[in-house]
Image 1 (cartoon, rainbow, N blue to C red):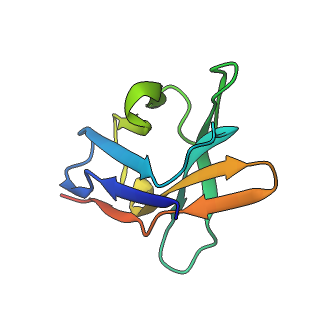
Image 2 (image 1 turned 135 degrees about the horizontal axis):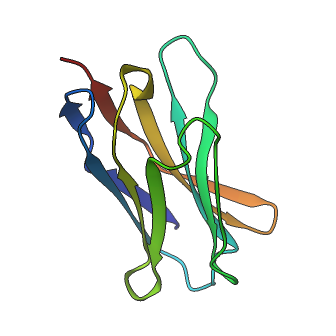
Length: 116
């Protein structure tokens, strides 16, 4: 059974940094892509960043370009999200997602709160 476990969330002041990690387990296939999404209170879940596992290409939401960086450690089936210059509007629950074909697997999320 595929399992995704996020970690690294917490409270950080505006302008600060956090590094989120997601460890994936329970599968023997090679994922097509791994992504980070977020959902702020009262808002829909939105895509933050994606890394395509075959080519290593990355994509980011306009709101985080230049501030966030996604990376994947193939050997440990881990995907990380380095977040810097954090803003209060980055406050959300951050979710990890793994995609294989048309199947999507989600983690349970980790809360990031940006506040002074």
